[in-house]
Length: 231
Image (cartoon, rainbow, N blue to C red):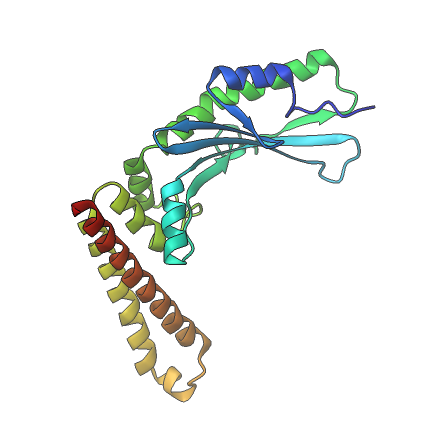
């Protein structure tokens, strides 16, 4: 029997369109909001079962400007903040929806209704929160986004986008000093002297040099942008 795909369910698509989303790609929907892109993607796996799909829903906010800055600086940036609804619900277990090949239309509609409820209750507030740059900054500073974004590179960029260039400069300066101290400590440590190929010390030094290069490039980028604005 042909799989009853959730992704192309007309009822679900109508719900998403009513919220302002448009289909993009086979499994995704997107909504433009204040210069950012709000994303909903439907994911599934069969978990090694035949004729079954376990669905989850990825939600994220993409910042094209962050991606563009990363491209110009030739460094890794996370231009999208996202997670799956399975981590957002208050249920004790990870939220998924099981759809079999033999599911009835009535049961399928119940699943679609529950998906839509979770989108409204959990995805939309999440998307709304992280469509505001200051909220990303606050949650990066507090560690709430530690598993979703590289703070070292992304936080100064979000500071800059929020119009807080001095915060970006101070943050990079502080992190560089901390990394430099760690590098110097490794160079003077007896264990390092005894073993010049100490892997951790070498890694720390490489990490420091790479971040130093990023900071120099980003400072140059901000200065060029400022000069362009004043012309």
